Length: 432
Ligand SMILES: Cc1ncc(COP(=O)(O)O)c(C=O)c1O
Image 1 (cartoon, protein in one colour):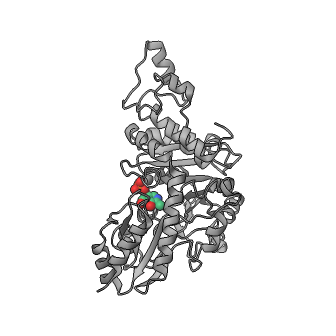
Image 2 (tube, rainbow, N blue to C red; image 1 turned 120 degrees about the vertical axis):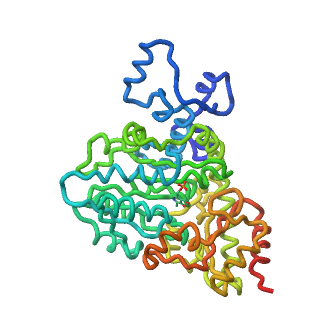
């Protein structure tokens, strides 16, 4: 499929006519819901088991349905780069974040390793870095005070830094970072820049094309938008040229993860989940386009609403990282549609109703179409108060680091008609 456009890659994935012929011509990918492969002979079994490749033997080591999703995700994330790209899939997004980072923290007898990270990230990511790595493993976790300041990042990097980490746009306040500038710092230090781009999806932002080395995704979100399955992905370009790391790790990081840490530690995605996500990921571009258009309209509506004190959406000029969003967030291949590339700023936004925490909770309670739920990127619009739910643990542990206002509602705009979404917000924000 080399040379094909983004949507063609998403639709075809890694399943072609030849592959279909091997499955009685099935038009869609078969779900291999089985734990192991059987072999016609002992010789065949030994040959497959001895291979240190990507063979299918036992489902923790590989599965054909999982492999199809893995190849599709790698092709979409690598779209527009010259680099070779591969992926490893995990049971959840947190599994992907752990898998992408933990192997870089090997502790030998040397000095204490450190990591440099943006604190504007999902609550559980903060907990993994602070608790699992900082408290339990003695890693020095250096949170950047202002993720938009490249100097702030540069100041914290030294010879013991193992990686740079950022979520862009971030959950919940949708802040971006300057990927090209951070990737220049990472290259100089010969360490990877790891980016969680879950909220953008490759339909709007492809960090590898902007210079990042490793991308992580929660496939539980927009990739699996119908909300049936959890999953995660680590996607990395080849030949990372890392300092002090084994050659095979640097050569093909995602392949190394699949063949070693993932297989050993076992947080693999189930083939059933991979199969449902394969169906959803086909339409990611069209869906994210529609969701982003509606989200922009909703953000403008809320921005002008007298009962709302603050709106966070990267498409609004008032947003702190609007300039980066304008530079980096484009609907993939939109220049082919109308001759001009088009910005899209994603489906997530936050807002604070006037009247504080109580008013925010009351507005949430009045929602009738939008679902009160702690997921995002779904075809159904969902809302939550992150300070009281998804980010509570992290905010309680260090309220000042990346403030999440307790009266801030996070809204993930789905693909219902935008008029109905706005009508629901309108009645929820009406105080009398
Ligand atoms: C940006 C981001 N990354 C990672 C995760 C973790 O994903 P999962 O819940 O699939 O483990 C989330 C979950 O909300 C998220 O929003």
